[in-house]
Length: 207
Image (cartoon, helix red, strand yellow):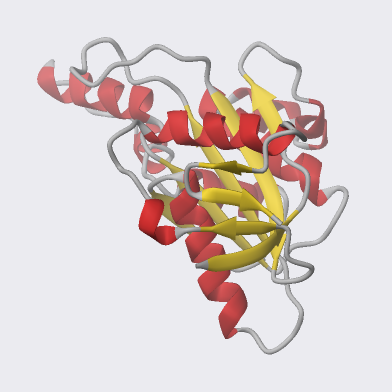
């Protein structure tokens, strides 16, 4: 059983305006992929309100659209773009944030679910000796149609700051399920946390 405190959730959706990105120079902003823009906008919005001592970036698919383009270049015997390759790896968004925002906050990148990110943040918080906060950002966009696992959904990013006190969320690890796509879990948590009438759902309980 994991007990923690969670702040309000900040969502960024494809098709919306990304106001937090205005502080990034236009030339660098244009080079960002959609999934990077979503993740950075969500993270920067919440960091404008409160600090974080650790950052957990998590995505199931990452920037798979860019990875597919690299594979297509190789298939057609073309040299992949070094820039595309360097920004296609799973921790690229974390690195871009650190560079563009000049923020050296310790961070990690996970290929996993929202619950995985909460567990990682909780584990880090339990190892610190001072009252600390961890920023958690989940981001994903649908896999290209080429993939058998393709499921259409609107790309999004969701972020929150978690700490240990005062406790307002209980995560029951025995109820973890990896049967559903991770983006579905994240969206279910968003609906659960926003619904004041819903106290318990799946592995989560408000307290």
